Length: 231
Image: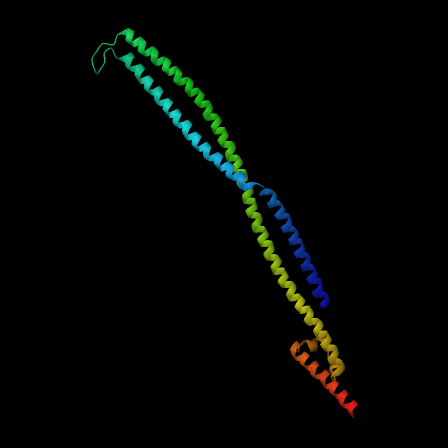
């Protein structure tokens, strides 16, 4: 029984050592993942905020330019479709029409050129946004892995505590078994008829009662010897 208990204890100690090695490995992984992570996430979140603001700005500019084009188109159509001013009823000569439409076309050309540049800026800004989002996602995945590692470490530590309690229980049983073995030997030598009892029969008695019996048997033997010497 003692040998069996010892084997179980050693096996459980090996399990604890394995779990501790696993914890060390997970901790090293988390340490590598966490290097400058908070700073990097903070910087990338600032970049993301700046990108959102920039996208809002360029989209607002795009809307403004589109509105300008719509206004210019409306102005050009007015001069193409009207010979008199609806407000003052003054005649709009061909010369005025040509001059106005010519200026509108120049303005429209300028706006179109500005829109082309803005379209390129929007495209670049959108690409920057995707890059920022991907990088931020990678950083958050690193944080998620660290959180997962922390959960694994907690479970492993819980398992270590559980195994340690089992070792303590087995160690106590081992000590009791050793004590019981000594008690049996003493009783077999000091109590008449005890040498004929099997280990199983001894095991049926509570250890405390057997221990008390040993103390009495040893005490009685000692007193007997002292009286014999005195006489």
